[in-house]
Image (cartoon, rainbow, N blue to C red; front, side):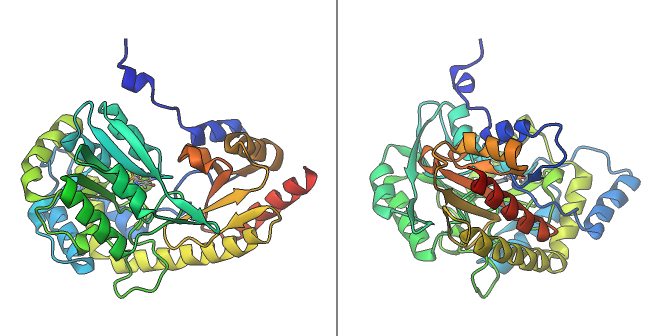
Length: 386
Ligand code: PMP
């Protein structure tokens, strides 16, 4: 029989809602975490050129040297300089995260995750046979905040790994540098690894000098127990390409090469060529994407806030409005009803943590912000019919 840890994995509640809308083309879908905008032409062209040159072979486990260089210099523009030797290219952010967990977590280990969070982040250590403990963020007037003392109480010398995702999917919560410093100090004292999922670092709407959310890379030394996971999916509109990277302490790099060999062997070369194009011309993509997402957020959130029974705060980062709806005591049931009765596709809050029961996630990455306005209308008239 299959391992118990796999048997116990929960099926995706977001998929369950999407399945309720199968075969219906009148549903306005905001349930998945991706933009509906196609990858920019010049990035696609780089992949086409690569294929036309006949680059159809295996690559180095850690990635093309040119892409690793491009990632190192991109990272070093946003953060203190990172040596190219610390970069590993992966087949998507999700694979980056799984590899990180495989690298440090043993069966039976204790892992702490800050939630609500994208469910993959808690499933991955569970797949390794770890015990995952969740420390919930605390909602204050619709805005989620970190209870540092709760994390300090949960992370002890027996905790192998702390998993943090900020800017956060689904809540939009971001960490201050001071909070990161406090977690880093605490994890130094307990000998705990930190896995920082920073895939949304560029989707940050607060004013900053570098257009980037606070990062653990800004404060940690290269050889600390810190692994940072990244993705091309969000900042470069490349979800379907499956390309990401890890920033590792030097001592983990050789082992990571082996792990990549046994997982995927390498990211495909034409995809990596697209990644090089994206990073070398990032200023042609990311600032525009971020400005558009901010416009989407600022279209959706104030409108949602006027809907009776909705409590919502403006996310500082990410691409989601996470809101509380009075009467939605079973988020999954509400989300399914919204699909079938209102033609509105949202993700249920309890997909991300039990404490987010009664919340719904709305991905606002919509090329046409009018879709968001239409969605709010559908929500309003559905509520009026209840
Ligand atoms: N981390 C978080 C928090 C995410 O929301 C996602 C995408 N939904 C990922 C990682 C992974 O993205 P990808 O695998 O597309 O790179």
